[in-house]
Length: 121
Image 1 (spheres, rainbow, N blue to C red):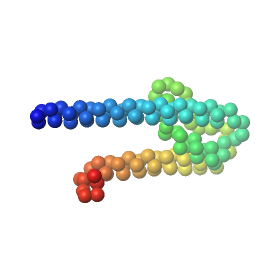
Image 2: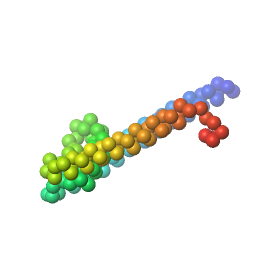
Image 3: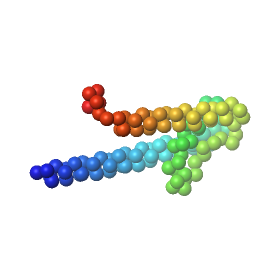
């Protein structure tokens, strides 16, 4: 009986890992798809990129990694920009995206390491 319980636990863990990997791959695919569409839209815009577009492209820059790894060339920086305002927006977007990503990651990591108490069911 104990052996069957151990096998169910192992199967449950393997299923959980497969589910997480599949979810991450699907999420990366969807982000790449959206990023390609947005990049194509930005490339056809003739106006110089300003603060808001810089902020948006800066936030999307870390998400371009899956596309770049598979050899897809995506535009992550606008050559035709307004100068300092665009670069400030790009920096704000990149740092905000990083702060959100790493903030959530470290919050989850600290919850994994913390022993379950009466509040954590």
